[in-house]
Amino acid sequence: MITVSESAKQKLENLRTESGFSSDSFLRVGVEGGGCSGLSYKLDFDNSMREGDQLFEDKGVKILVDKKSFLYLVGTELDYSGGLNGKGFAFNNPNATRTCGCGESFAV
Image 1 (cartoon, rainbow, N blue to C red):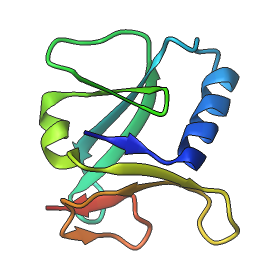
Image 2 (image 1 turned 180 degrees about the vertical axis):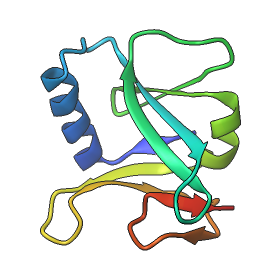
Image 3 (image 1 turned 120 degrees about the vertical axis):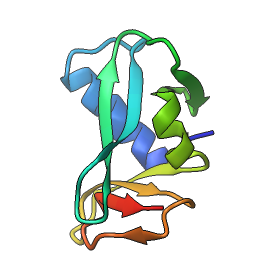
């Protein structure tokens, strides 16, 4: 399962509205090769499921993850910080053995 913090939920709702996506849209979370540590996180809104997607819902946020990415993201919490020291989304990933300084990439 992938979860979202309350602060991430609020920010995602604002971004979804600003981007013109409906409340029925999904948050697509994924992993791709790249970044300092080897793997990078991806976040985007999507209107449709694809074959092989895993669907989760937490705090009213519908989350889609492809099969490959799910192996790296199981148990992850998506958080958001709006503070002066590091504004943005953060992935609290229990599977990551190493992360880069900016927190946008990881290794397992």
